[in-house]
Length: 198
Ligand SMILES: [Ca+2]
Image (cartoon, rainbow, N blue to C red; front, side, top):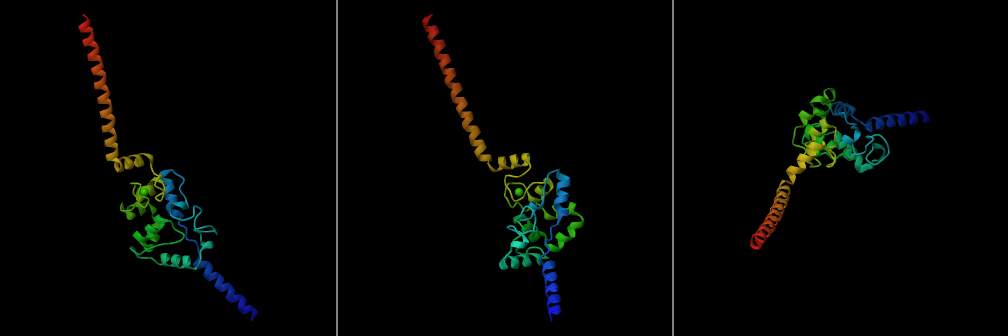
């Protein structure tokens, strides 16, 4: 009886261990790291910077029942366009599964160079103006609006604030014009005074 209980417990443990297997997919961030030269890691797609394994917030070991249900639902989202809210993925990770579907995502493991193309240019979860597929290739974080390729961020911010920039230039231009006119008037007055003296 004790032996049967031991076997059952072991089997259950094996089952839950396989169920809880972390499923980090380093192929993607390793490719991003290779093409960008930047030190991107699990934080690219996961809630926790160290990835899904562990007991920290956003890691497998800390999930409660409701979070486990969300995790299982996300892992079963094999086809695209399903609502995904995985507790171990960040917003970008959720969006990948939503856009591609788990099946397509797993297929891309063997050719991560096609990941950006498949993801397309419709997603920008941090709304910094740089598409997430580009951020993947640039090795920057799609979930951090202040983390991006410096030049792309500059132009994206310029585009976002173009009316403010134009207005600021107009104000500065008018200020300089007024100042120049004032200097010209002072000069003319001084010349006229000199003429009158003569
Ligand atoms: Ca972005």
